[in-house]
Every structure is written in structure tokens, then in C-alpha cells.
Length: 443
Image (cartoon, rainbow, N blue to C red):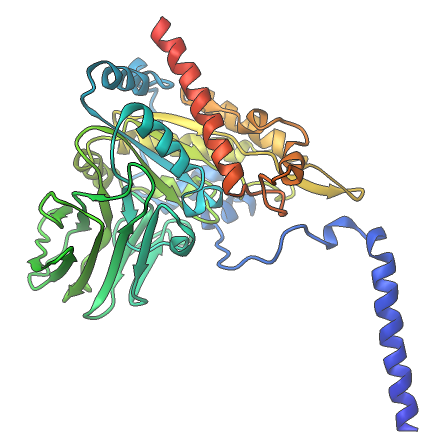
């Protein structure tokens, strides 16, 4: 009798499986997402509050006591005029330095898009160096533009999921702390043009009453121990005394009370593009920047001439096509950034196309155009530059075309670009900027 029940149960399971496979295509499409399960999923805490019904102005003010009041920018700060003026000066004199901060989400993870944009600028206008590198990174293993390794004894606080950090967030939106002696990190340059060396790398860290902290620095055949002076709000330690190197390793002692931010690698002239990507970021967390600390970063890093805000993938598909809350919130973000980086221009890059299965066919998600329109409105209201990436890549149905191209330009989650697609996106953005720059020069 037991054997008979077992056989019946087994047959039922087999039949159920066959029926499931046979009728799968007729079931609701959302049951079968096109993306594979992701790891390291990060949720933007400010966005969660906003879509939960909280008023965006209240959310941002409660999270940051130093959020500045909205002010209309000066004419020289509007749109991309200041950036183009600096670029023209660099082009004409072959002297000077331009710094770009590129803030994004998982679309720029692993330096995708940004590494190719950096290469295009440096090839055209000069410059050697990868820019600012955080202490630790969720995409370190997938980044080809630098080999970045570190011990598991670093503690990270990110503006994506922490509102009130132990110490203010650094320019990358993170702050890092060692946990015990011997905590280490290492950077090795890649073989890519213009970033195949670490150029005069320097360590950036914050204020502390600690007088015992030291760092052991190893590069080439040199090994030296230096004291970490922590008297200033932002401190800078040259690691190789201005020399270039292929690799540098730092080992920290008695430093647990010190906030660390990252290492910068640049020369004195040319264009430098810092990639500040954070998975799960809507863009709203940039409102958490402390203006005083950012002013120090701005001065120490040579002054940001362009801040790029490339967001959208994490804002889509939250049950509403009304993005007025996001429009208001990001207007606040732009205003805060102008207080942080007083001489910068702001460029908004819209969401890319994203496909969703509808009636068994992949089509442009209905939220894409409303979000891109909201991004264009807040760019206009804040007198910022704007590039509509959705339209640049082909508009309606373009993500499906990119996924199905041979070779493919995007992954089968119908949201993210692969390396080939990211390179194409970088060229689209660069060419659009250069077209606007040529128009500026003709005025």
C-alpha cells in the first residue's frame, strides 16, 4: 500500500511539472522576470520613504540638517557654460586641469561607460590618471580600469542606506573605517592608455584626535612608514612623494578612529573623470553631502568643473507614473551640489530605455518616458545641462534592439548595458557634448 501511494505521488509531481511547462507562456508575464537573481541588492533609504508617501522635502530636510535653501544660479553657473569655458581654455592654451565627477548607479558599476568617456576626453584633451578611487568598492572585482583589493576589516558607511553616518560622507558618498591593526588596501594600474600608471597617488582622510596613527606604504622597491596627521577636516597624504608607480599598498596601524575616503591619481594638466557609482542609488542620497567638507574636497582636488548625474534605473517601476516627487527631490540635490562645488556645471543624463514583458513581448516599460520627462523638467528648472539617453539610444523599443543585436550590446535583464553597449553609450554622450561644445564656440 505504501508503495502504491508513493507511485501516485510521484506521478502527480511529474504531471504537475509537465503542465507547468506547457502552460508557462500563458501565465501573467511578470511572474517570469527577465533578469537573473541579483546579489548585493542595495535599497535607497530616501527613495523608499518618498515612494512610501512621505513628502520629499521633509524626507531630505530630516536626513540632512545642512541642506541649503534653493537659490537661482548665476549666469556663469547655468547649463554647461562654465564647463565649456574651461574646456575651451584647455584646448586653446594646452594648460590647466578639468575635473569631472560622474555620479551614477549600477549602470556605471565596474567603471562601465565612465572608463570609455574618460578615455575619450583624455585622448582629445590630455591627462593621465584614473582620478579618485574609494577605499573599498562593491564593484572592485569587476572593474578592469584598475585592480583594487583590500582586507575584509574595512567598515563602510554609504549614503545609499545610511542617513546619519558616524562621520560625514566623502566625495564618493561613502566613509570608511579600519577595524584593527593590519587593515590594508592595494591599487594596481591597468594597461589601458592614460591610466597605465598611478600618477602621484594621494590618500584622503578626515579629522580625528588620534596622534598615534601610521600607515605603511609599499610601492616599487620602496617601503616607508608615515604618520597620519589628523588636524584638518580633510587631510591629504602624498603616498609616493609625487612619483608615478604601477602599484601601491597601504597597511594601517592605530587608525580605527579616523574616517578614510580614498586615493586620487592625477597629473597637473588634462581632463580627469571620477567614477562615483553606487548600486541602488536614485540620486537622492547626494542631498546628504556636508557642504563644508565638500568645499574642502573641491579645493583639494582642483575644483570640479562638471558634475554628471546619471540615474533612473532604480526609480522605475514603483507603481506610479507620477514622478513629481522625484523632480522636486532632485532639484534639491542639484542645489545642494552647487553649494558643495560652487564653480561646477551640472549635467543630467536621463534614464536609458528599459524593456518589460507585455503580452509575451518585450516592450519599452511604460514608466521610462514619464521619468525621462521629469528628469528633463528638473534639469530645466535648475538651469542644468540635459542629455536624453533614452532618445540617444533609439527611443521606443531600443533596449530590445540592443539586447538582440549581434553582438549584443545589453544584458538580458533588458536594463543594463554590457561592455560593448557601455562603450557605445559613452561615445553617444561624448559626441552629444562635443556637438554642444562646438555650438558654444561658434557663439
